[in-house]
Image (cartoon, rainbow, N blue to C red):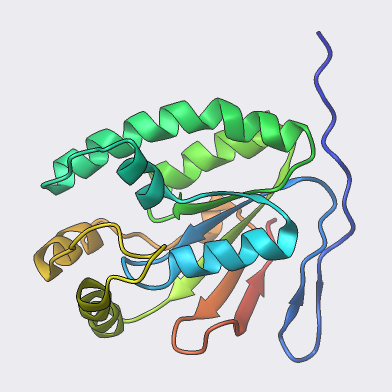
Length: 199
């Protein structure tokens, strides 16, 4: 059975103001790197609208699946099960020329390698969107989110102790990973900070 060829796109352009005109050569898997409460889900939803893409929000899916998460080990367990289920569907969407957005799987080398296996297997392009934010800024956002419970962003109370535990495993992408990266400053929403082309 012949493999479906990905839909072709135009080349990426970045204008002088630093604003991006996302236009890709082929279907693209966008995924996001950032600490908890740095704005990953908000950015993911914006990207989904901009690219007319299918958006996968990890917290939303775990909530829909009624995953009970009381510890980091619980989260890792349910997250791995979810990724196993989503992988073939994301790959098939990319093969059909449909852009895909993950608001997750960008925070460790292992997760990023998993994403690479999807876009390379589908013959698709990729972009890792990296949100830069201090721990203090993220904790302030986390406290506000726990208090206000905004729809579409709040999926349960997250204590600062869990933030600290999760952040210990956060590893920014390295040049050796050879990823196409767009960087953002969390304090200036929508502002493109830097483009790092792969290779």
